[in-house]
Length: 358
Image (cartoon, rainbow, N blue to C red; front, side):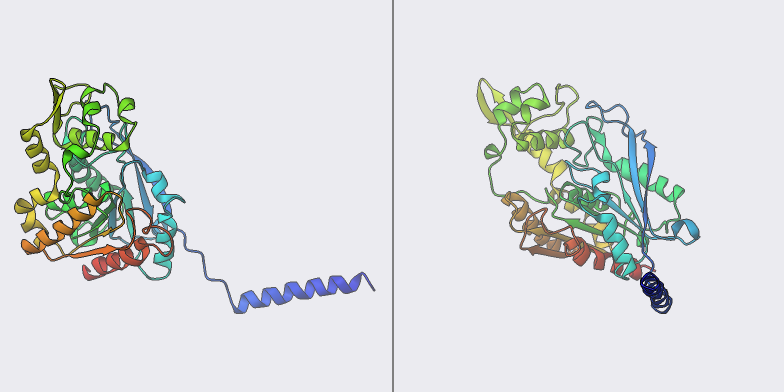
């Protein structure tokens, strides 16, 4: 009898547990999936810095995509330098889990999210458009977007297409809507760089003497600002005749003296800063449905903060309707996680952009 009684209690617990789950079933888990496909780029072939034309594209598909025939809106996400789309969808940012949570809770509609591959042999790309280190904007517009529409059940219209990105990617997102009118209806740029110039003299930034004498990236890597400025020059003042970096610098070493090259400064500003492109592209921005940019005021580079403050005022000058927010944080510390700005700010933006476009 002593052995029967514990068995009876165990069976009773199983029966009660089964009855509980019948009466109060657990909600199904929501789990989208991330696919990878290889895009053989013709646009990125033959770059002087050796960009691999095989790009590994990652695509988030909402739960139920494989079982249905529905078409979905699309967000294109441009990742920052020093980053890749593997980590973007992984635990370091948690974007996949945030998308699953947001769709499950009705915070955003089911959507496809495309993360292109913007890696280069060094720190990444600045979304320039040249044969030295890549025609990245043409790659996105002429190759990536058509291939995504061919492979997946997208709602292939600007009203159901949003582009977003952070830091370098935030710059790239704004540059795309400025240069390719009609491709996207809405853009969210998180802490973009190079919207406008800051107040510091260019002489005070990288080690210009080293920039002029270095023969390899390893020499520049003693300070990340050197690598950033060289990538900037490769992207916006490229020169195929100046190996090993194939770029014209704003400050040159002449007879052992550092001398500002006014022509190179003018060329870089004209090709790089978004405010310099604004007079020719404001008409495209005025036709956008939604534009939003934000930035953290605690960026340790004040040029980014000052540039964004000036750029939003310049957008007002040109009659471009937009949202802009300066928040208490830095460029990277407030965006990710369940309580981060991707969920609290980007998700409501996506919901508005996609549902208003139906």
